[in-house]
Length: 61
Image (cartoon, rainbow, N blue to C red; front, side, top):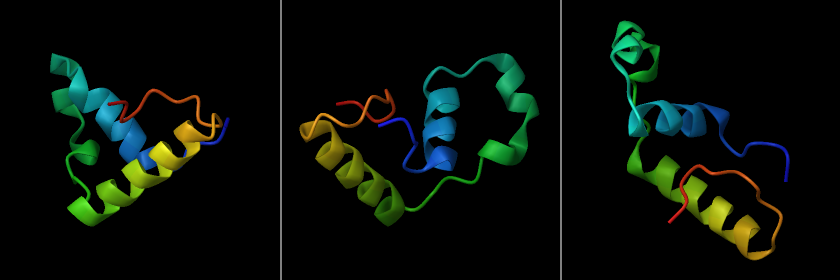
C-alpha cells in the first residue's frame, strides 16, 4: 500500500516518538487524537499488514 491511512496521526507519531528540540517550536502537532481514532487506525493498519498490503512504519507493534 502506498497511500497512508491517516496522514495526520502517522505524521504526528513519527515526530513524537523521536522528538527533537526543534519539534517543540511547532505547536500544530500537539492536538492528539482520541483513543477511538487511534484504535481505528491500528485496526486498519493491522488488517492491511496481515494481507501484506501495508508498507508503512507507523504503529508497528
